Image (cartoon, rainbow, N blue to C red; front, side, top):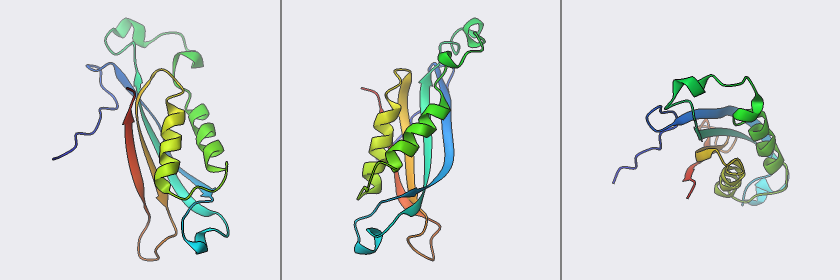
Length: 137
């Protein structure tokens, strides 16, 4: 069975795409003994499908030039930083789920795709990690 990825920008679906890409942060993460001693680099990507009232009605697309009418990617990035620095997490999956849950704090967020990559695990691989996709129920 092939999974169909969610649509992250679609006029027909009334969605816009908000993202934060390639955040590289020091995270205390891992289950192995050698990962308990200190932080390691992780790369985090956040992709959000956000309700877009202007998608169906172009007259609403260009509304007031005000931050309050959109999902603030600075707030999303700050939430990611806070979650990553909150303490040790054993699994990349747990970190991704916590970030996904925080993104849903904004009611306009319809679905999220979060990737967490550990960058220094294997010398012969650029990264290892996980991607989670969640949709508001």
